[in-house]
Image 1 (cartoon, helix red, strand yellow):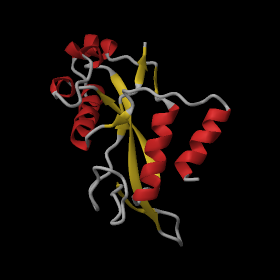
Image 2: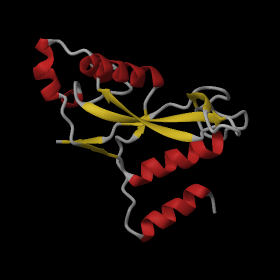
Image 3: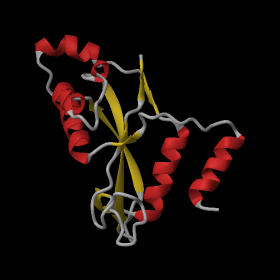
Image 4: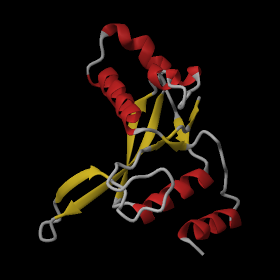
Length: 162
């Protein structure tokens, strides 16, 4: 039994499995643009951005457990991931306009979270982080549509509330 199968069996035992078609990786370029939009709005807001800030409000974001477990165990076994960073972003119009992503228009401008797979290394003596880069697929990756040494795309398309 694979790691994915074990995690899904555990989740099914406790009725934790939920599959949703929206939960999936998003191309890094689009995710990075969303993080930039978030930083631009909240790091140095202009007085005219108050309405946009209120419209972006999101109380929570959630992912279906089946999709998240499958993604996480797949990259665990096929990349150099050591940690997952939870990053805030704002959905952009470009994501709605892209025919493959096809983000629903009502999500444009809303705050969401992106789960970024990272590879980090620490100095054994001091415990200080010496490297923090986006995780890459291993040379032996068995995942479909992946290339060795390519960055692992972040996970997104969460359900957002309200």
